[in-house]
Amino acid sequence: VPLSAIARIADETTPRTRGRFQQLNAFRVYGGLVPGVTKETGLATLENAARDILPTSYGLDYAGESRQIRQEGSTLIGVLGLSILFVYLLLVGQFQSFRDPLIVIMGSVPLALSGALVFTFLNVTTINIFTQIGLITLVGLVAKNGILIVEFANAEQKRGLSRTEAAYEAAMTRLRPVLMTTIATVLGHLPLLLVVGPGAGARNAIGVVLVGGVVIGTLFTLLVVPALYSFIASKKQAAPKSYDHGANVTAQTA
Image (tube, rainbow, N blue to C red; front, top):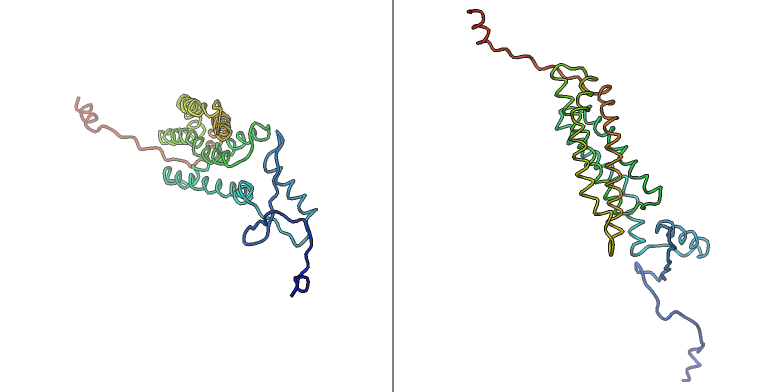
């Protein structure tokens, strides 16, 4: 039986190999980024081009770092919210109050996060997995400054001062400890900004967020936390004064 009776021979141009991904026929598209363009922007450009060119029967999937961007890029808000909630619950247990921890969270965390994100808008760094780690770490770093002020102000209220007077005394007395801890934190993370070589981009991203966020957050904390305390802090009962009965008896006898 001749081969021509059951088959036809023809020359065609085909790929050298047929790719498979997720058990489906697939081909990969690679792209290079020009300086100044983020990976998120480049990936969005490829997605828009694929939707315009590919037939409707084709679908899009991701591999490598692109897959990580699409799967984990939207988890920042959720993780950040959980970290703030966790810090709040710990402070509730420490202060035995639901209002005092709000002063620490509202007076320091949003301002510090906003200050850190300013550097992403200025193109000093980008929002990536490393800056996300820095933002979550920043929540705990800046909260300690508010804790120092609120804790001391509560002690001053128990001595008989009003909320405004207690906030003023706490801000003045705790200024030096707050500045000392801030300087120590900045100097500790400063090498992340100065490092060069392989992996420097990841370290620089974390360093920019931590150093910038701590500095800006501390400046606002010293102003905003005392102001919030004077308005929404819970009132503390002044501790009863103790008297030395033995000294009174001696004085009466004399």
